[in-house]
Image 1 (cartoon, helix red, strand yellow):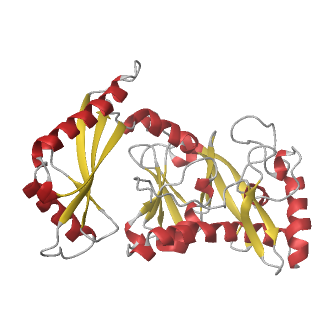
Image 2 (cartoon, rainbow, N blue to C red):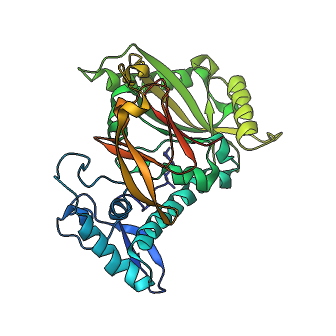
Length: 370
């Protein structure tokens, strides 16, 4: 058995490049096959002939064919995308090409909604208390549908969704962890040995942090945790400790029982407690970045950011939707759905029945109408 800490990540095969196809039972499926970025969706014109989620969004009018994000293509081929959807999806299902395109988006949204339910409702959390943050080039086209399908409180579209991950890498604190297996009951522990082990782990982590010659940090802090369990159990409980002064049997017992009560239930009496692993982390604090600097300094009123009116297909009918220059919108500006907001790295679709508002950080908060 390999015991190592991991970050649980639930992935969904329904991104912009995910391919739409009809299975043997005649049902529409999305992914997990993907056209990726090369050759990419049919509309890229680089050789792929299987319709994707991006092709569907384009045919529905939600993506501007004359303004592809990323700047590598001059124009997206709407006609080629429509033919692919018609030949591969609409004809086999006996529906129109627009109905097929909307069905592709609905199935993709359903897959995303299902993944959100797994990490919320199925774990006892109320989605109405949570805000979802779409990022990347295509996520903001689907956030409205997820708000409606799952019952989320709101959606938060970052100022620059296409580079959100890169921004996080730059501003997030740096952390290095080290672990030592102890596997002894706390009654058999030697306090001095634990302190020595913690110091060795700290020196290892600290050396990794300071090896960077370019990164700038305000401080480097120590974080100590322990993996503990009752004798006879197979799954350990992660216990956060107040510091090195807590590396003694009494404090370890108290911290474990508090964590056990919070994560599992009532602590058990008269059963030995085992310390499985000692974990030490060095957390390098980066200088604080005031994200309000991302907000537009000379933002304009909604009407001044207007670009055009566009026909879009939504909820089974053609509708007229205003298109706005997202980055030009000032703090506090609101738009009613249906609406599209365009910028170089993404397009945001505010669904009918939703409202988009620019907050003090330049994010677009999408909410259901009151």
